[in-house]
Length: 61
Length: 239
Image (cartoon, chains in turn yellow, cyan):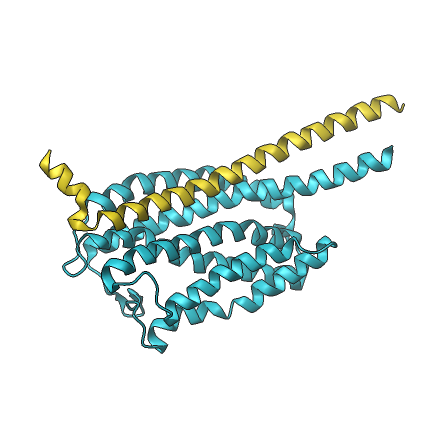
């Protein structure tokens, strides 16, 4: 297991290498999550509006 | 050419591209990250910190590239009034800001062990910080007008004017004496060992396809919000 610990030690630069990758993961997944969330929310809002429009046109012959 | 300006036609192409962009991106990350973190060699001067390069350099290139996309589509919007061009720029801005921010923070994490400081006000770092503020300014400006179209035009103009920063970023390491290392890409080819170049290019391609995939999701969202506005207006008019 010594070699694995050595690997994570990154030649003494662990505190710089790992945060860089963690931040990359955070940034990339963050923008994806936000984009997907707003898309889904708008899709829901739009289908709600469509349903309202359909019920409106039913009421007015 | 102008038939691409039709949003329905444009989204048909974008939706067809989406699975390829998303799939290629996932594949390149799945192959690229293990190579970058495990199998690529440490640098003879920078030792293991060179692994930061595999996220820092793609993030930096994407920061500039996405801004280039924004500037070109803003020009198209201002000249031909194609709304889809503006929507592309608008949807790109948060992604580009994220890439530029990532470039800045990973650069700091690389600068501290190699230069002995997180930050220096040298030409490359300063011009990159300006790029980050241009993105933030663009996002803020687009939303700060009562009249949507005026906001769109002001933001597009800012994107165009700000594009003078792109050549400054690129040539900053040549024009000024900077602490930042010179470009690894030049007309003469790449000044980097193949064992590091291939994983780097793989990560760059992963970032590029990731941008395309996220951009398409954001485009769908932007077009939906336009549809929502029209539907709301029609509903109110019918009442």
